[in-house]
Picture 1: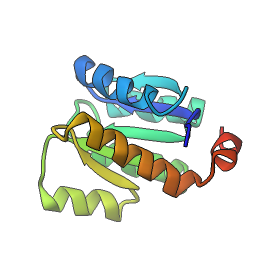
Picture 2: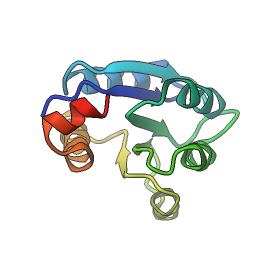
Picture 3: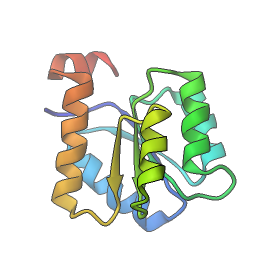
Picture 4: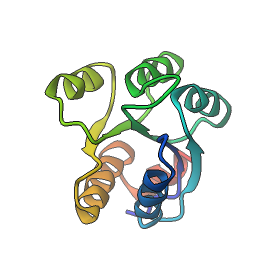
Length: 135
Protein backbone atom coordinates (compact mmCIF):
# COMPACT_ATOMS: atom_id res chain seq x y z
CA UNK A 1 0.00 0.00 0.00
CA UNK A 2 1.31 3.42 -0.94
CA UNK A 3 1.17 5.90 1.94
CA UNK A 4 0.90 9.60 1.10
CA UNK A 5 -0.20 10.95 4.48
CA UNK A 6 1.37 13.51 6.77
CA UNK A 7 4.05 12.05 9.06
CA UNK A 8 5.50 13.80 12.10
CA UNK A 9 8.97 12.44 12.89
CA UNK A 10 10.09 13.32 16.42
CA UNK A 11 13.68 12.67 17.52
CA UNK A 12 16.35 14.88 19.04
CA UNK A 13 19.04 13.33 16.82
CA UNK A 14 19.20 14.65 13.24
CA UNK A 15 20.78 11.47 11.84
CA UNK A 16 17.91 9.36 13.23
CA UNK A 17 15.32 11.69 11.68
CA UNK A 18 17.14 11.44 8.35
CA UNK A 19 17.41 7.62 8.53
CA UNK A 20 13.78 7.06 9.52
CA UNK A 21 12.64 9.72 7.06
CA UNK A 22 14.28 7.79 4.20
CA UNK A 23 12.43 4.64 5.31
CA UNK A 24 9.10 6.50 5.47
CA UNK A 25 9.66 8.00 2.01
CA UNK A 26 10.06 4.43 0.74
CA UNK A 27 6.41 3.79 1.66
CA UNK A 28 4.97 6.33 -0.76
CA UNK A 29 5.04 10.10 -1.04
CA UNK A 30 4.33 11.29 2.49
CA UNK A 31 4.66 14.84 3.72
CA UNK A 32 7.34 14.76 6.42
CA UNK A 33 7.25 17.11 9.37
CA UNK A 34 10.05 17.08 11.96
CA UNK A 35 10.37 17.99 15.63
CA UNK A 36 13.47 17.81 17.84
CA UNK A 37 11.69 17.49 21.19
CA UNK A 38 8.32 16.62 22.65
CA UNK A 39 7.13 20.19 23.24
CA UNK A 40 7.78 21.07 19.61
CA UNK A 41 6.02 17.84 18.56
CA UNK A 42 2.85 18.71 20.48
CA UNK A 43 2.78 22.19 18.91
CA UNK A 44 3.25 20.76 15.40
CA UNK A 45 0.62 18.09 16.06
CA UNK A 46 -1.94 20.72 17.07
CA UNK A 47 -1.17 22.86 14.03
CA UNK A 48 -0.74 20.16 11.33
CA UNK A 49 -2.84 17.16 12.48
CA UNK A 50 -0.50 14.52 11.00
CA UNK A 51 -1.82 11.07 10.09
CA UNK A 52 1.11 9.29 11.72
CA UNK A 53 3.61 10.20 14.45
CA UNK A 54 6.96 8.44 14.83
CA UNK A 55 8.05 9.34 18.35
CA UNK A 56 11.37 8.86 20.13
CA UNK A 57 11.19 7.90 23.80
CA UNK A 58 14.29 9.69 25.15
CA UNK A 59 14.29 13.41 24.33
CA UNK A 60 14.97 16.71 26.06
CA UNK A 61 12.30 19.17 27.23
CA UNK A 62 9.42 16.65 27.04
CA UNK A 63 10.17 12.94 26.72
CA UNK A 64 8.32 10.52 24.46
CA UNK A 65 5.92 9.17 27.07
CA UNK A 66 4.95 12.70 28.14
CA UNK A 67 4.54 13.68 24.49
CA UNK A 68 2.43 10.59 23.86
CA UNK A 69 0.19 11.50 26.80
CA UNK A 70 -0.27 15.09 25.56
CA UNK A 71 -0.98 14.12 21.96
CA UNK A 72 -3.47 11.44 23.03
CA UNK A 73 -5.24 14.07 25.18
CA UNK A 74 -5.56 16.27 22.07
CA UNK A 75 -6.55 13.39 19.77
CA UNK A 76 -7.42 9.99 21.29
CA UNK A 77 -7.39 8.52 17.75
CA UNK A 78 -3.79 9.60 17.05
CA UNK A 79 -1.62 6.97 15.37
CA UNK A 80 1.71 6.97 17.19
CA UNK A 81 4.61 4.57 16.73
CA UNK A 82 7.24 4.79 19.43
CA UNK A 83 10.90 4.63 18.38
CA UNK A 84 13.64 3.89 20.85
CA UNK A 85 17.04 2.39 21.39
CA UNK A 86 15.77 1.00 24.70
CA UNK A 87 14.24 -2.44 25.03
CA UNK A 88 12.85 -1.86 28.51
CA UNK A 89 9.67 -3.95 28.72
CA UNK A 90 8.08 -1.57 31.22
CA UNK A 91 8.54 1.39 28.84
CA UNK A 92 7.03 -0.61 25.96
CA UNK A 93 4.03 -1.64 28.05
CA UNK A 94 3.51 1.88 29.37
CA UNK A 95 3.62 3.36 25.85
CA UNK A 96 1.10 0.82 24.57
CA UNK A 97 -1.16 1.37 27.60
CA UNK A 98 -1.08 5.13 26.94
CA UNK A 99 -2.28 4.60 23.39
CA UNK A 100 0.76 3.98 21.18
CA UNK A 101 -0.15 1.95 18.11
CA UNK A 102 3.21 0.21 17.79
CA UNK A 103 6.76 0.20 19.11
CA UNK A 104 9.95 -0.14 17.06
CA UNK A 105 13.55 -0.38 18.23
CA UNK A 106 15.90 1.93 16.32
CA UNK A 107 18.52 -0.80 16.01
CA UNK A 108 16.09 -2.99 14.04
CA UNK A 109 17.36 -3.61 10.48
CA UNK A 110 16.07 -1.09 7.93
CA UNK A 111 13.93 -3.63 6.01
CA UNK A 112 12.26 -4.77 9.24
CA UNK A 113 11.50 -1.17 10.26
CA UNK A 114 9.98 -0.58 6.83
CA UNK A 115 7.88 -3.75 7.08
CA UNK A 116 6.71 -2.89 10.60
CA UNK A 117 5.70 0.63 9.55
CA UNK A 118 3.99 -0.71 6.42
CA UNK A 119 2.11 -3.31 8.49
CA UNK A 120 1.03 -0.63 10.97
CA UNK A 121 -0.16 1.70 8.19
CA UNK A 122 -2.08 -1.13 6.51
CA UNK A 123 -3.68 -2.16 9.81
CA UNK A 124 -4.72 1.39 10.72
CA UNK A 125 -5.62 2.90 7.37
CA UNK A 126 -6.68 -0.27 5.54
CA UNK A 127 -6.94 0.00 1.79
CA UNK A 128 -5.19 2.63 -0.28
CA UNK A 129 -8.50 4.45 -0.75
CA UNK A 130 -9.00 4.84 3.01
CA UNK A 131 -5.38 5.97 3.49
CA UNK A 132 -5.88 8.66 0.84
CA UNK A 133 -9.09 9.72 2.57
CA UNK A 134 -7.18 10.15 5.85
CA UNK A 135 -4.95 12.79 4.32
